[in-house]
Length: 457
Image (cartoon, rainbow, N blue to C red; front, top):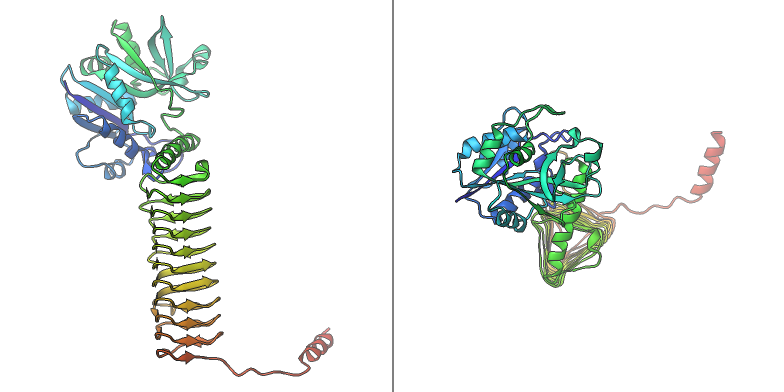
């Protein structure tokens, strides 16, 4: 006997009104379909087939190697989709067919293992759950303790709508039973579609055994709207954060900490509330990130500190310090014990070990040497209106406050610039570069301005 999986991912998701396939909406850095595929792979099926339809090419692009696809060109319902997949698989009668929706990101391999383990002897085994608000989901009808049918929300009467046990659209079928039921499903319903849920009632009518597995820990299964997406994301965040905390990561308030599934954290790191860490980001042991930080594809080294700041494709090495209110843009690198302080913006800039930009500066397309210090209000003027140019600041250099460094320009090792200077030429090592107009005082200027203003009235 073989186990095959059919993932239904052809729908448009019109209730989301998002202009993209519903199954590609993301939770914790991964599409809903990717979460489903991860759960399915953990159950080790012989074959996995994804039924695609709306924007099929975009959906196929995210599929891992070895996952097969079948096209549902006309979305005629879940029963029709399952039939296409069965024709493609052509399984043996004794095979088990697992059917899952592509919009169920909270599925786990453990749940599918339970489903497969509960299925022997049944024509179909369904996964159900109880919801406080079951609106939009198919209701599970029972008689004499067993499942007798599943009725879709749009087709349910008032008594059926009061039922809070709902179908999750997760099934295990015997291939023979599914093949038999699919041949009899019609579209005489509110939506004019072939419902896979109707297979349950048909098999009950055949006198076949129908089993049910209750998934009590899944408050949201299928996701049909953005409020349901947010609810599922909340569950996923708790799973991710609990797993990291059990591995030695401290989170002061995990309910306000947002970690993508693709992020790597080290034991001993501390994440403060309001922090979002996304993409391929990583945080080293002993580092402190937050509160209120946003890291995307960025690395924070051991014992580094990042507070109230945004990092986009940046690297902060060991014991470096960022913030508060700093913005490290793509290509920025802080060496060990370097600092990008309050209201500092870096772009494509490397600060060597111990270099500091303490506050209120923009440094772009620059290389800053070891232990150099850049005074408040300084700017690298790196764009001439057409091209970007590089600035080099040597080791131990001292850039005076409010210095404009007009690139391309180089400040040599141990070089200085005077505060308020506009530096347009290289400053040799150990030298002071100053560019200022002589100060001039105009006596009685205040009285002259006042008299001029009065005469203009």
